[in-house]
Length: 464
Image 1 (cartoon, rainbow, N blue to C red):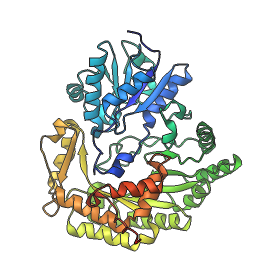
Image 2 (cartoon, rainbow, N blue to C red):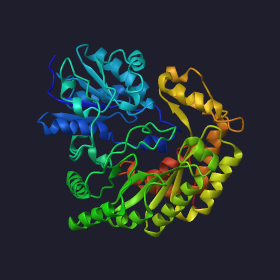
Image 3 (cartoon, rainbow, N blue to C red):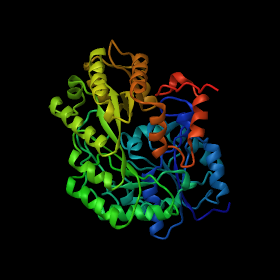
Image 4 (tube, one colour):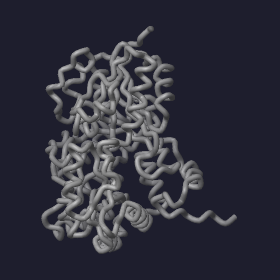
């Protein structure tokens, strides 16, 4: 069997969309920037690498694509990244297929949110894997190419290099990413990065140079990078420096990032807008004082909401679209949800759209049980007590007032209250839809989707 010299990185896809299955959800693309970071590192060292995304293709189709590109079979390991527990069934099928097609293939599996919680548990799900990497791969990536890798160093700072999007199969379909920082450490009970300390942001001049390099990778065409940072919290001075650096390089690039409503200072927004910030994903989660405390979002709900209000107003005043994330949490009641809805109503002029969903416990029992025990004291209970060990995804009945079905219906109702069809397309097409996906494509997909599953109210068809 002739083997290639390509080191293939595969981002595990989905057998079905993560949450609500409809045609629009199946259009979404998520660049696996973690896997791209590893591929870029090896590429900078002279290796021949490739990153391919499973998206909503079957494992069979993806493996056929790898073979047609001359990347499989390979004399190197097949590097499989599992970005979420929703991708685990796809990864299982892919691993079985790889070993059936090439019994001599070596499979290295990473994805710290899936591998890290319990390596022994994941080993039972992926017996074909030769190596499971439970942390960040940058410190050990070269060792992973050997038959006896050293996994003792699994923490790494934010890489200083620019991601090479040319290594991504069909890269022009994806919006690019620029890593700004890693970690958060704010302690929110539902967050996977609650205990991972926030790193210092890369220097703003370095970020601006990365934006210019990424624009060149896309041939100077219009791009909307996602500034990757679990909590993007530049101070006004850093923000002003980024604006100056962007202007000095003559860049006109609109970008997106995410932050907390109580961490990013309103004074930074005007500078960031001048630097190209167009969309800001904000983790409000709730406006109920009871739920703010339950989530451990803040110790002082009134101060938390005051800061949120000021930040949203700064976004509106500076032309930044604020997309607000809302989480229905353990112990949710009609009253707590009404508090959140009323607060959103009062700030509707500042909000471009919302994303709403019930809380889910991710991970095997080793990590999920800690959350489930706490949530049970708030009146929540799992829909299926075996789901943590079976899938790593535990849906919840949130309270006596909100079982899982009622929580999903309430999530859709709140979303439709604050998300228009136009806003949904604008926000999704900015970052997640294929770059050549246009409004006509979107409208056609809306008509082919079940309206009751869509998180926005469908506009009536025009009268002809």
